Length: 282
Image (cartoon, rainbow, N blue to C red; front, side, top):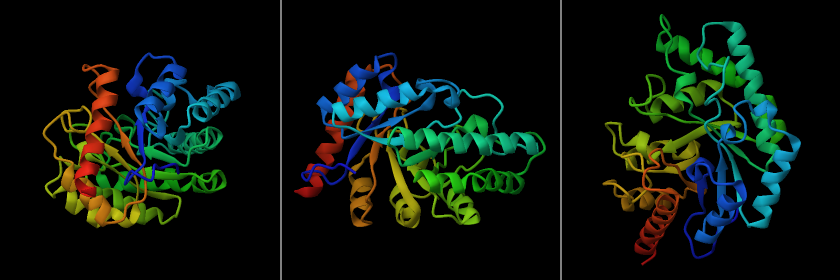
């Protein structure tokens, strides 16, 4: 993991933030701003990750090396796919989803990544007639079936709790930890997202402290769907808690509202995080 000795954390940005920019321009701009990592949404390369060619994979590695960026891994794993579902009652759908997660692990490995963030609410929300306990067992089965491939590829799957705005399954970090404990594999841990945590009744700082032992990745964003510092969420206590808990992973900027424009989203987010660092260091 690359990290500037002057920074408390290594910072990354999700590649879909750059919208329709050519990959080379996006990588170069992220590097120029001072990001040290980039996180890839597979659908930005192909809606079906199995169709992402060896040349495309090599191109990602080449650009990362050229612009001194580390590819963290993947997120939005099942977004824009068809035929896959984490909590489906149909065994064939679950089998296909397991196989697809295994293929994503190979993709992650091929581009130099080590973490896969499993959010994708539209491919996991409760289907008619399925209650939460059933869904947890279905999700466990799907993920557990791909764990050997995760290990072979040196990849960790990070379960991502999401708030009620996104869906109705795995709405809290506690629920995410429950699923992680059921799977009971070193290859399956937890991801925390500021926008999602802000929907919980607990404080974000409390959630971090309770979940830190299993937290391997972290998304910085505001409940208004823009970048950190572009809304009302104060990141000072959040980042102080991460420091106090000795979090060693990436902080990756992820946004959902692109209206401010690529340049402003990418620049203001990183500047704000660095300002918080300065306050903590001071």
